[in-house]
Length: 282
Image (cartoon, rainbow, N blue to C red; front, side, top):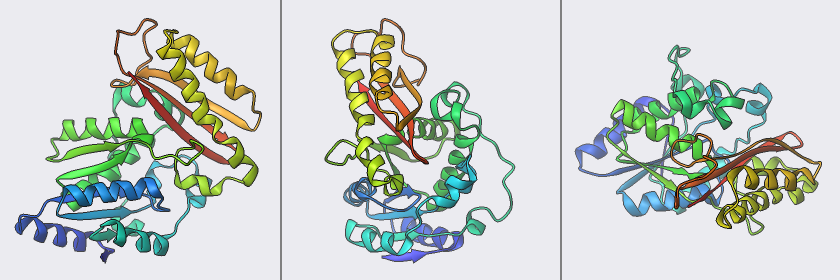
C-alpha cells in the first residue's frame, strides 16, 4: 500500500491509473478507523481495481474547536488496518495540502441542511461538501463509499454530485454496530466506561420508534415514545430525535403513504462525546 501525503502525488497516481483503464474506489474518512470503515474499504476493493482511502480530520466541518482538538488521530494504526482490507493508496494530507489558502467557497443545500445536523451545526455541511468535492477532484474516483450512520451527510453528498455533475457513483453501506447495538464510531473510544454502558440506549430508542411505526403508530407518537425512553437515563443529553422522509429529510407527514421510507434520526451526548445514529423504516 502506498502512502501519499500531497495533493499533487494523489493526482498523479490517480491520473496514471485512469490512463491504464483502472477503476478507482474512494473511501473518505477522518481516521481512527473501525470495522465500519474497513467494510467500506473491502467493498471498494471488490468492486474496483484500486482503492484510495483518505484520512483527514477536516477542520472546516467542526463547529466546536474542542471537538476538533480531541478527535482521535491514529495514522499509524489506521495504515496497519488498511493494507489487509484492500486499500491500494492511503491519502494522508496535512491541512496545508487540503487548504493551501483559506477557502471562501460556501455551499448551501437549502432544506436538506436546515434540519437535524445542519440546524444544530451551522456551516457543518458546507465544510463537508468542500472537503469531499476536493477529494473527488483529486482522486477522480468512479465510486465513492460512505456509511449510512451519517445519513444526512450521504444525502447531501448525493445532492452535490448531482448538482455539480461529478462523474461518479455514491454508494452507501448499512451502519455497522457493536454486539449491543451501538453504532460504530471513531468517537466511541472517547466514552468513559460508565457512559459506554448507557450508549446502547440510543439504538434501543431507534428500535422502539421503528416498532411503533411498523405497528401503525403516527410518527409523532413514535417519536415521543423514543424521547420518553431516552429521558429515563439522565446521563443521555438528547439534542434531537426526528422522524423524517428518508429521501428529503423533511418532517414525516402525520399519515405517511404505505411503504414510504422514514428515517428516525437522533443526536445525543454522553459526557463530552456527541453521537449520532439513525434507522430507516419502510
